[in-house]
Image (cartoon, rainbow, N blue to C red; front, side):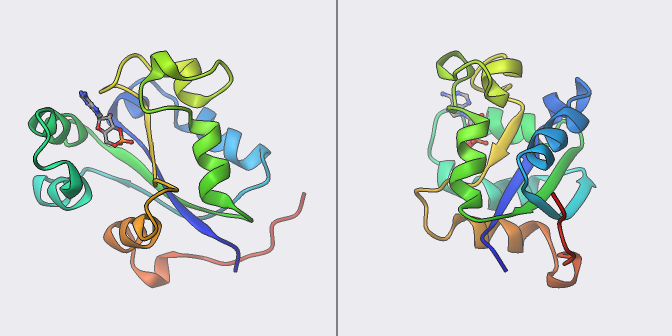
Length: 146
Ligand code: CMP
């Protein structure tokens, strides 16, 4: 299969009704949705997911925020999927994100930036995050027709 990348609509995006808009953008781009899950992240999962930020001053706020309400976690598949998704998502800070990107169009600030996508510069990030959120049999295969 093609490259797989982990993406998640954060609690602010869910609360603002942006799941459909975000899913549509990736679908229209030709990426293939292979897994999706609407879940409430608990503190343990938050610590595992954001472990690399444990020493950052904003870590407690980050855990508080990501556990504040449900998230919509997804796996998208396609050629060069990680880089494609990152370019559609924009920069971490919405203020630095170009119009037309998801954060550039909908993000409010560094915390409330609507969406998480695996870092393309972190070699193992996709596999690690997919494994953390999904069982192998939750990734489904089918033919995507354009
Ligand atoms: P994300 O791509 O999910 O990965 C880590 C998150 O930490 C990032 O998005 C931001 O939402 C958040 N973050 C990064 N820097 C800061 C900061 N200075 N203050 C608050 N949140 C931050």
